[in-house]
Amino acid sequence: MQPIRRSLLLPLNLLLAGLSLSLALMVGSVDIPPGEVWSHVLGNDGSIHDRIIDQLRLPRALTAFAVGGLLALAGALMQVLLRNPLGDPYVLGISGGAAAAVLTSMLLALPSPWYTPAAAAGALLSTLLVFGLARSADDWRSDRLLLTGIVVAAGWSALISFVLSVSPASQLPGMLFWLMGDLADALEPGVPLLILACGLALAFVRARDLNIATQGLLQAAALGIDTRRLRLELYFLAALLTAAAVTAAGAVGFVGLVTPHLIRRLGGYDHRILLPAAALLGGSLLVLADSAARTLISPMQLPVGVLTAMIGVPVFLFLLHTQVRR
Amino acid sequence: MSCLLETRQLSVQIGRQTACTGLDLKIAAGECWALLGRNGAGKSTLLHHLAGLRGGHAGSIRIGGQDLVALTARKRAQQAAILLQHSNRGFGASVMDTVLTGRHPHLATLAWESSSDLAIARHCIAALGLQDLAERSLETLSGGELRRVEIARLLAQQSPLSLLDEPTNHLDLAHQATCLRTLQNQCVSPERAMLLVVHDLNLAYQVCDHWLILNGDGSWQAGPRDTLCDPELLSRAYGHPISRIDSGRGPLFLAQL
Picture: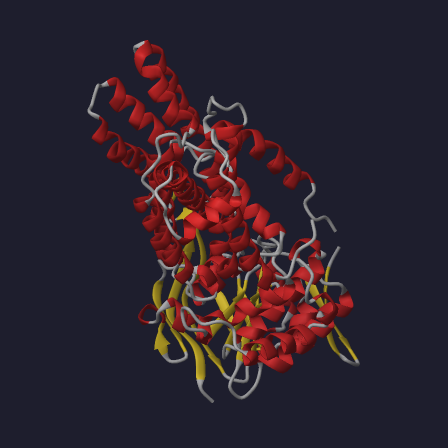
């Protein structure tokens, strides 16, 4: 893959975001032609198509965009924190922690308003667990961190299997939603979009520090960065972003893993470009995946997490095996 | 001449091993110091403490006249630059981007590199003979090329004090000579000084006017080179017989095989 001019990365991803959102408004059980989508953007005439767009497709597409952006941003931060391309909320068991917490509260028959705080608590607890366990003296060694994350993820998945096996059959479909990632009921984009915007702004302030942190934390300290504070900030921000994503759409994998890699391979090593570009690309990818999930075997809908995994696995393997070699 | 680095009664421990006890060191601008000692004597650890990357020592360290503990990380990096022993390719950023990160301590939080920062980076890249590699990814460089990129990044930092941990790692003989010459020209001046960890006594003799020797048990010797380049003293420090041969072009040091 050839790097492209870095000044083009943001405009291109902005364009892709626009196109993917427009596509999401067009396709579905009823196809709405592009002309009508555009005239809707310009003014609402109260037709059935307008109501489909307003009440169903637009909120769902925006939620998908926000969740994809949140995951990509969290992935980008974790990859720097770990200095490892495998950094991703899903791989590190943070999404798993959130899903396990929600499933447990479902099993305990807690009312549904509890699910959101449970997901957030699960994600934060999982992050604390991983980083607390991996901590040796004053340093988080990245290989230890990754291994700890993988093992903690395995632990969560065992807990999830346990909950699934003792739960009444009537609860299983609702539980699978959290497990696989699904946007079918995700119609409130406000909060995730707001968290994405705040998270991006906070991370952007640290963008140049992140560039240097990829060269190792000791090097970052040598160049005058308070690495202790940087690590804490990154890790709380990544946990918060993940919690917001999981709360909105369940545990969606691979967006956080693949998106920052794609941007880097296109020449976006500078986090001042990578962070916004990854948020845009992650959002677009999840919107496209969700549009496909809604239409591939319509009228049935696939959970979007299944699709991101089916696309994400080969893409990641391809990226890994075509890495630039000397 | 101003004192760029001063330690008073500095004692540094690494686990149970002692790097130095009661070290009183003064490095003035215009001086070039070699830090010598056997493997595991604590040279890198001492360098990390001097650069403020590690704490937990006894005694005090002053950089540019200010106590290290009173300096923020950023202020410290403006005063002292350190080249780490082990190279790191990061995520594969370009040579230019990597050298530009040397300007980090001089830039405000949200600032982008200015044209003068770019000019400094280009100058440092050229000083290390890397101009043809400027747009290459670090992942595609050889070990020696990567080392030169890191030296260029250190030069771009333009700190009065430069601390270098084995700068000649991975470099061939010709590049060892040219890189050390470049470092001498750029990092030793009426305002600047450097301290480098080096294993080759002959390079240490040619490049540095002062030596600091760690004996491995906490004891140390520091002073002008000519008072310390005694074969008996060196043999004790390295725990191995070292002989000195005086040639027409200065002394040569040989370890007996």
